[in-house]
Amino acid sequence: MKLNIFLMGLAALAVASCEDGPGIVQPSVEPQLPEFTDADVQVALSQGLNSSAINLQSAMASDAPVAIVDVTSVKNLPEGAQLDFAIQIS
Image (cartoon, rainbow, N blue to C red; front, side, top):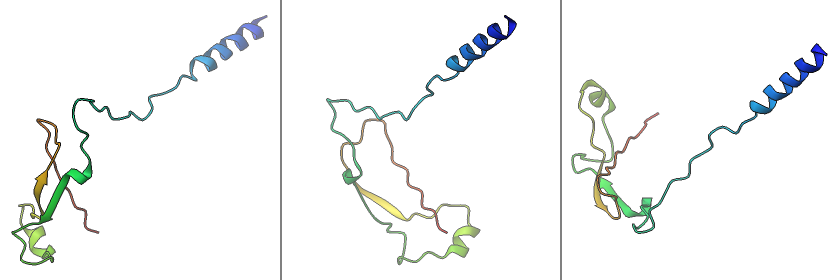
């Protein structure tokens, strides 16, 4: 009798713990606004760079970030949104 109660409790615990967790959330798009895609952003090599080469030694010595790209055109960016770029060098 005690074994049956224990097994029923164990089965109830197993069923309760099989709940689906949060999945990948799909981005919501407001149908009245145009969808923002990567094709809506145009960038160019920063005017501060003299060439396409960056002196990594001097860049690491200074605390200021190195400007690599300038955003030349942005379309369909939602109000209040901003674009940030990060480049990883390895």
